[in-house]
Length: 377
View 1: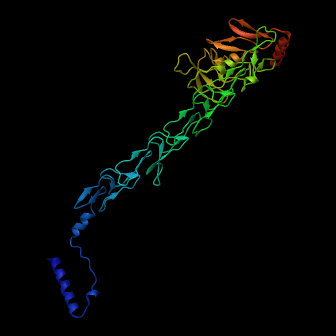
View 2: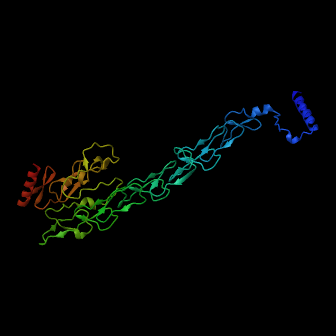
View 3: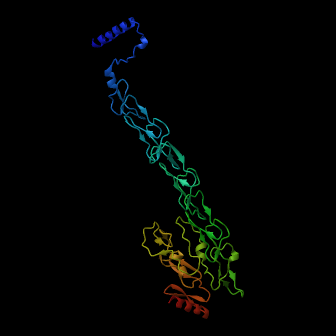
């Protein structure tokens, strides 16, 4: 009754004004809320709900801050049912559609991207890593291919090791490089190639071993002449008879074409001096029981499993370097023991308790031996 009386009074007043010549255009427009209880109900829905003839739960893919409507999540965001706010896609996931209820994991070889990103979250798309890079599934960023491997696809999932005869020196390689003539490598995942040892050569590129210098016959026909060459020789034309001051021939290591997964460590190529590549170490559990774990020196760092029964510079133990025997010529490691085939000119092989050495056999050699001994003192 109260609201009816108010309206009736307003109409009577309006009729009086019209009768006195008042224009309807002069009447102020008055908005009358006919149901104030309805207005209050629309504003009373809690966060996570919206109003539609009553409060209802916010649907998945939308968010409801607590006003009259549900709002759609943007790309790079998602929500479950009853959300008061949208969540950004986690790192390594993305969505390129509005109103998403979940995000998609980034494929391997791709990475999450987009303008809505914040600390690698909220990606709206995935992009290819590109050549020289790789990524695992669910990655927010791509990584450079490590040295010793290559990534030759725009969507590489995992680096590939360089094949024997090839190497990659730096990170981010899209292909491996062939070893140059005069060099070789017989391991997977190499970052460099080894020079052909003295007494061997290699004229081709991309090789896993070198070729031994061809034997030469003595001018008098009485036997063979020991042949050597400078380390890194590219042709048999560089091979010559071994003489005083020449690098001792040790082609056995370079000619061995066995291939393993271990990182290549180049053998000594400059003659009978210690390699200095390894030092004494404690075995750390090589998968092959015949192998010994040796620490790699010369700035390379790390450890490697060595077959000490056949390895020239770790024969029988990490410290026993057959090529370091003074005045040695040709030498091999056989069942963990050094076997000297020849010594340098003027020296001959002598075994004491199974241990080989090279002793002077001529006056000139004895003079060299005494001179070296005095230098050591």
